[in-house]
Image (cartoon, rainbow, N blue to C red; front, side, top):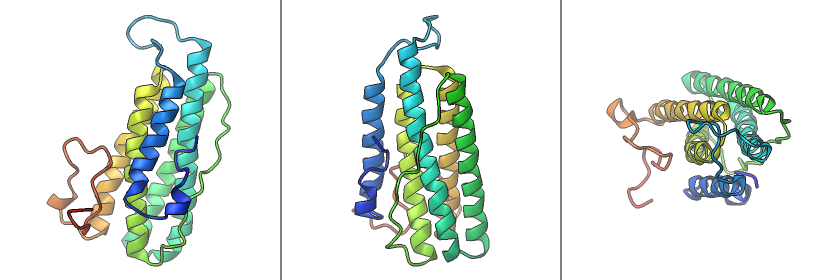
Length: 203
C-alpha cells in the first residue's frame, strides 16, 4: 500500500499526516513482528528480510514523491526558500540512495515508484512551504512506524536517521514560514503532528 494513497484527492490538509502514518502502520503490520537481528541473537529469516524490503520500498516511494514535489515547487520559490528546498530535495535523493543500498544488502530489489501528490491547489510560496511542511511532518510519522516494523538493523538505522533529518527540515520550514527562533523548536516528542506556524489552535 502506498504511504500517500488518497492524498492526491485530499490535496493539502490536516489529514495528510494521519493518512501517511495509518498507511505505513498497515505496512508494518503486514511485515510481521519477528525477532529480527537485534540483540537476541536470532537469525533473521528470509521472510523477515522480504518484509523489510517491502517496507523500505514503500519509504523510497515517499522520497521519490518528495523529490518530484520539490522539483515542481521550485518555480514558486525565490531566495532562501528556493535554496532550502533545493537542499531538502538533494537530501531526499540521498535518502533514496541510502535505502537502496539497505535493500540490496538484504538481497532485495528496488521496485518503488513515486507516489502521486496533488499540487494543484498550491499557488504561491507560502502555499508550497506549507505543503512541504505537512509532507515532511507526515514522513516523520511514517518513518517512526517503519522503524518499529523493521526486523534488520541496517534498514532500521537508515530510516531512523532519515526521520531525524525530516525533523530538522521542519525547523527550517517553520522559520521560512515566519516563525522566530523559539517558535521554530520542535516539541520534545514531536512525531510530525505539530501544525505549521499560523495554524489556528483548533486545527
